[in-house]
Image (cartoon, rainbow, N blue to C red; front, top):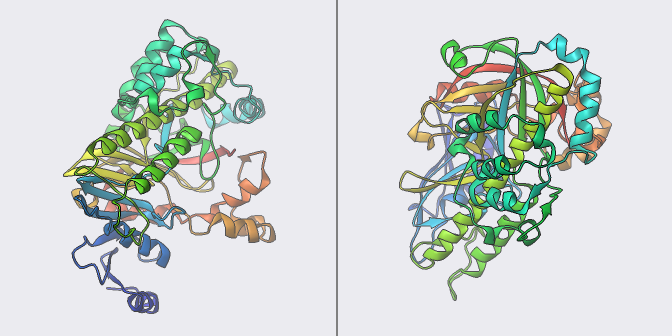
Length: 479
């Protein structure tokens, strides 16, 4: 059954050539003049608004086809679905054969989530809240963090990710990491997706970050980044899957520390480079695609496909270590204040990444892998719960899940109108947001996001994931 308030919008889209159908909380989308392209599916709660721009972007993604060979096999989108700035909707998942689409990942390569838990009560934490905040502000905002490393360690980071970085750091610890429990970090590597280690190459890294010798002081490492990225202190309010929670070391009443960040300027550098290269390699004399999404074909440029995938994982390696270091700085401050706190890692999970799956590759943009038995981390806004879940490996949705609630209001809209709205209207009453920029607090206000509960419920009902635990925010750091 189609929601009655959609009929006018869908008729308008039909006049523009977009065929949209609704059935059982799922929208199917395809351009009427492209009957040979896959039908794109969007899992969206009935109560959620449908954005024409996002539907068009998803239908465009399904049409991406290289004239020399390569096509889209399947396109779907998770319930955090909303328009993307670079022509690809957030929440999109695309399976391709014979081609990869650099623009489908974009520049925030391996944006992802990391979750730790700690055996501290909310009362214990809040008793030292001010001291903790001041220390973390120094690390996150005022450049007091020390993530100095040798040239060899930095090279290992780009080539082999978290495992390469750790091996080199064990040989020659530098910076604040000399205070860390490196054996704990080694034990936790199997709690990172793909062990946080992919086959990168130095040739794709920014030159200034990979000198032959000396010490590297990279201003981008261990930084949160802008937009929807954050570091958040939470408490575990409810465990719903007790056996898995026990297996993963999660209990009600614990503190949780959630980190959402990516590859920072390295991702922008590599993503921008390959967006331009994909366009430059388009076949001469062939009209540009209407979508302006340029694939790389295995038939005409197999070396370019291999190079792009290698470049992407080089940035992904950087992102894995960036999140690790953000978490380690936080864990070191916890120990400084509260003594010997273990704060083990639960899981680290990527978004915005291309992976070899199914018939060729699966690219997720603002969506995460949700394979059978794999932990899944889905945050709410800083005024709403976040969720730890387990993937069910649903092939109808390319074994994927959402990476958040999804925006309902743009940052531009909030920057124009947010200052005229009350704290209650923005959902900011009682929110403990630590930031140096008031505009960031408004742009990322809870009112900017869809409600998280229907997002989770839709995915549970569709068999994508199962809830393990629910966390409530205590305070949030926004850069």
